[in-house]
Image (cartoon, rainbow, N blue to C red; front, side):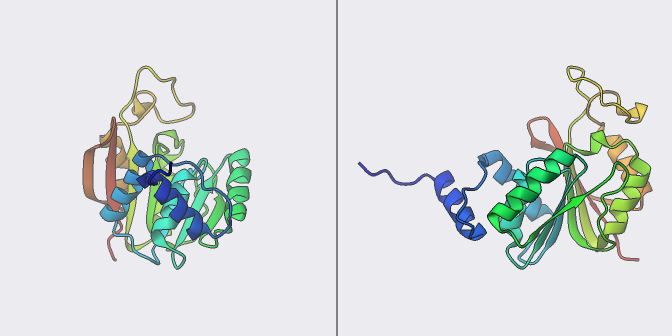
Length: 212
C-alpha cells in the first residue's frame, strides 16, 4: 500500500534536490524550519540575500537559511570550535553547497568582512560571548547600512550551569533581554523589533544598522 508523502518528507526531498549532491539532508524538525521562516520574514530575506549564522554548530540552521536565500544568495557559517568547523566543512562539501562559506571566528570577532551581510543572526550564542564590547563592534562592522542583526536567546536559567568567562551581569546561564539591548545599542545598532514569545522560553530582538 502506497502512502501519500508527508509535508516533512516532501520538504526534505525538495531540499535534497536543491543541494543537487545526491546526499541526504540533515534531519530538521518543523520548529527549526518555522524559526528560519519567521526570521526571514522579520529581516526581509529574498533570493540573493547574504546571511551569517554565528556559532553555526551542526549547520542545521545554516542549511535552512541557504535553502531560503537560494543559489544567488550566500550564507556564512561561523564557528570557533575546531571539531565543529571540520564537520561543517565536510557537510558543505558533501552537499556541494556553493552558497555556503564556513568561517573560523574567534571569541571577540566573527572574522567576517566589513559590510558583507544583509542579516546576521545568533541563536543561543550571544549569552556565551565573553567579550561583548569587541564582539558587538565587529558585528556592527560586518553589517551593510540598513542590514539586520537578530539575537535569539533566553533569560538566565538557574537550573543550567554558569557559562565561564562571561560578564557578571548575565545573572546565570542565559542573558536578560535588557542587557542584550544595552550592549548592542552601545555598539551603534538600533532596536527594530522585539518578540518575547519567539519559541518556548526564547525571545528574539532584531536590530538594524541605520545608514550614516
